[in-house]
Length: 308
Image (tube, rainbow, N blue to C red; front, top):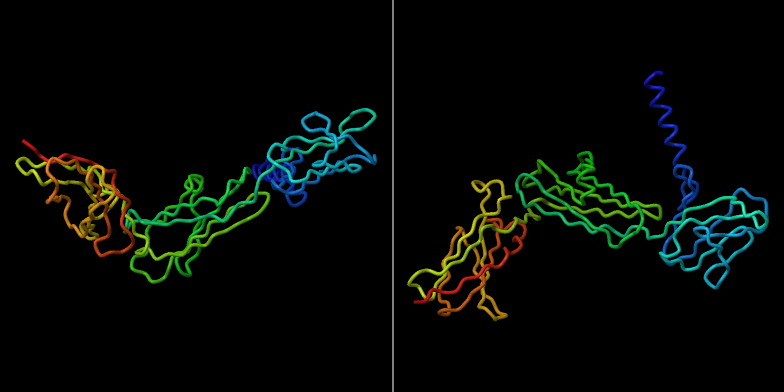
């Protein structure tokens, strides 16, 4: 058979296997699926019957009308539905018990507004954006992410990254007053929500924390500690894009800390400390000319001052 004809027939079969029948409804692989929002009223209609009254079942168990379920002719209305009411509903003949039709009811929420955060830990090479929804939908929710710079055409983030909840923008434009525009759209059978986030790359610089942070006593120096560290391994260019550092340290048991800023090297001697005491220290990195924001703090390390 002609390969083009085979592809055409395959596309037609896929089209007929997924047919939107109404808002919140779909037929997938021959099974009628209806979607409802938790906390609202949902009405199910019996199909393929001319009878005026039918019997409704949920997962093959007969449904009896109550204050939260109303049986009206060939319809079933569920009031203020909750997650426990999802399942396969079917309508049947009162005389024979034969099924007329069935529907799989799935319950959840429309997507909330995506909450987007963008930063550049690998400046000047790339920026990364991540997102999360305001709420759990409990329904299959598709995320689509695009970005653009100025009037340039929008580019779609890779599906692999999108599934992981992030998008990497490479070959970023440096020192541009034109912002990047990132659009995140969440779609499920109950609704669509989008967020548009704009940023200047230099304003979102945020290095990763320094690594291999170590603090140690200095022999014969009972009031000093030697602090050493390495730049974040993810920072790509320390020759033309320098980093500086800040230090936070505190005495064991104290809620107060001291801060030292604008350190342009990867070691520092803490002095004027309390003899024989135990001190905790953290280090953060930031762009040398104060673009963006400092990194998160490194995990705390500790050392006790030298004593005879």
